[in-house]
Image 1 (cartoon, one colour):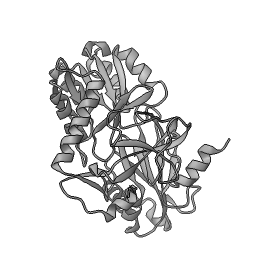
Image 2 (tube, rainbow, N blue to C red; image 1 turned 60 degrees about the vertical axis):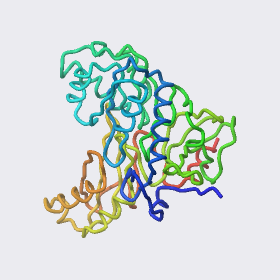
Image 3 (cartoon, one colour; image 1 turned 30 degrees about the horizontal axis):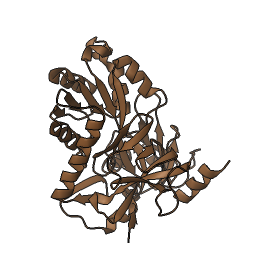
Length: 358
């Protein structure tokens, strides 16, 4: 019998082998054989995107909790390419690494690529085409409208998307307007509000699901929502997210983990997550309402709140304290204000109804 898992239910599953830790409490395990399979699928995906032995590949993806950068770089080497992996943080360092490797291919997030583009001339006085990139492959985020076209025009190179497994970092599919799935036994589209795989060719709102750590009898819901008609070998690209994790700055932020971290601080009445993208990168803020006015401007309390949030959030985040009587837009924990329009809520059934409404 096929099992259906969400991030919330993973806490009850013991793991063995390589532990992929994508967020607090969300851990999947891969055996040596399963890791080998993920590497083979990633290599096939990169090969379908055009990478071959003539390429020099720079991967700027996270290696914190999940080894996306290392896994994808190794897959490129399997194809005969020269490849290296650097942290996506620090655009100047990424530019120096690109020039040092004389990279022909960059693999990063779409926001990372857009931010890099914005800094190339400012930091180095270079034109984007001076880097000599033949292609840029992006994944791990929902790009802003027009971003991919701008990247292609400015870098004067091929731009494609990668579907990166949010739990392991493996490259599972590639494409531009749609994903071409490399291994249909590892990724599929599911009905948003039922534990059921989607019927091919029918327009609707679906959720991408992946095999949980390579287990053949378990589908794991990614929280990535796609709109359109999936088929047996293709899937629409993600346009929204759903569930108790929010995708921001290329990582999945756990609302339950933030709630637990703040629960141990006296005076916290409620909080909300505020996410926006005014420029190239996401801006993430946790706004905490305190029920004791004297604590709002207390430096020690501000430090406690900041440290609590940073202990469970793997990206740069702002924290702000407000009074409980202030006119805050959210009065319950786990509320998300997503000014990007990406996150459609915690409840999959409610999201399905909203997408189905005329």
